[in-house]
Amino acid sequence: MSNPSLLILPGDGIGQEVMVEVRKIIDWYGENRGLNFDVSEDLVGGAAYDKHGVPLADETMAKAQEVDAVLLGAVGGPKYDVLDFSVKPERGLLRLRKEMDLFANLRPAQCFDALADFSSLKKDIVSGLDIMIVRELTSGSYFGEPRGIFEENGQRVGINTQRYTEAEIARVARSAFELARRRNNRVCSMEKANVMESGILWRDVVEEIHKAEYSDVELSHMYADNGAMQLVRAPKQFDVILTDNLFGDILSDCAAMLTGSLGMLPSASLGAPMENGRPKAMYEPVHGSAPDIMGQGKANPCACILSFAMALRYSFDQGEEATRLETAVEKVLASGVRTGDLMQSDGGTPVSTSQMGDAILAELSSSL
Ligand code: IPM
Ligand code: MG
Image 1 (cartoon, rainbow, N blue to C red):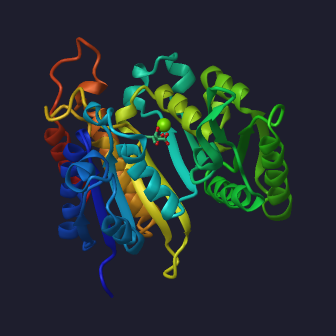
Image 2 (image 1 turned 30 degrees about the horizontal axis):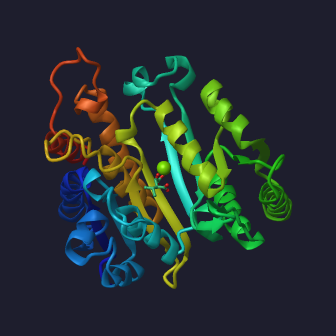
């Protein structure tokens, strides 16, 4: 059998630096666990624009469709702010999501014990926090038509459309219920059914799927604004949060910050199963390209490394190896090794991006 294939798209800014560390981890798995991947690398975002004049070349898109999983670093940077909307780095990312049909975006927000002090909330509110946001990723107001800036009665009008079909809601709801079954069996669905018809339909369809297929899972509903408030008030009440594309974008940033460490959070974007039974998938850290610290060896590679752990779990059926990697990261943090983003101002000397990667490698090796 051929090796599973992995397309690496480091992208821009610190995306490139953190991916160097991920590649060390991938090599470690080949050398020590007999897990070999066919790894290829290509450009996305500003890096692709610089070479091809577009944020994602057609050939790269075609490769992404063929591999077992894509691992992406980050896209964007101030250099590209002046570009036309249609070729901005973010468009490359959105094209990947849309054309691979990665409708379920899994964004865990987990508070590592060693980092509970970093949260802007009180320690007892966040310690032990482990929630999973399932964000719909290929529809809603990010993609709905009509969209654009038009001229109407002598003035401009900007339009985006929140649009969801039953099928789009149903499939992401199933993803959330399936995940909940493997966690703490609770789903809270968030929309604005009090003001939006799309929210009313969302709630109805989630109810229907629940009743017909997942009545063993505990389901609740919340208006998304209340959800934001509850996330900050008492986040541990949640297990899986199911929500749409735009609310999910906002709520997941909020949830990420509860943990105090954006540099720690991975994500997975999953589509329908392919012929081999694996879902189409792309994995990426939640953080962005961080142009302010790029090229200085300051970036925290953990989020990207943990994204690879998610790939091991969701694309390669290597749940135990995923746990091994997650545990290694946790132990390294617990031992006090920190990149700058994980330090209080008086916290001593931060390690570099590559020192963090090496510490995780050493921890992996001692786990054998
Ligand atoms: C995210 C980001 C993206 C989004 C941007 C970079 C297009 O904020 O993944 O949350 O809005 O979806
Ligand atoms: Mg976002």
